Image (cartoon, rainbow, N blue to C red):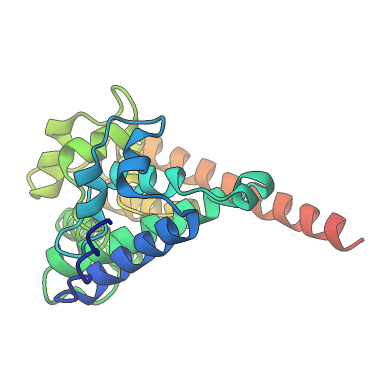
Length: 231
């Protein structure tokens, strides 16, 4: 007979909430940790999955995603709702990381509308990084895609030693730190103010305009889909 699982560690509420979510998924799937480890996917051990759902630590984001995918129900697979569940797991992971890593004074995401100079911009980027749960430079670089934002550049931005050199780098950093597409034009507008005397200002202004167009297009597409659904 299998040994009963230890209770979730509730020292950190947000961390326990993530563990509860993962345990509920495993119970609904009717799988043991050993069975989960044997399923196709990244090479993750039984112990890794156990630790992820213990509440004593915060697992790697890749581990959380694998946990969700390996406990996918037939209904989620059939109706395509697994993406929604993955997003929910990512939010819980971010909240858990934020709870243990963000500075005590950070109670909400930074507002790019308040950025007026380079020091403000650097501080806002660092606060957004903390609000996102402090992803490591390696995680940021990996999420950005090959060659877009080198790990060393991400590290320098996090430490306040440098600003993104191009709009592409800024967008990659912001997306890796949880900024949604709807918010990108506001951040790029802040960069336009910051780089007002720079030769690269036109690049930032063009990126801002393009981001605004993308937001408008997505809104229009959403409206069309809604009207078709209710017609």
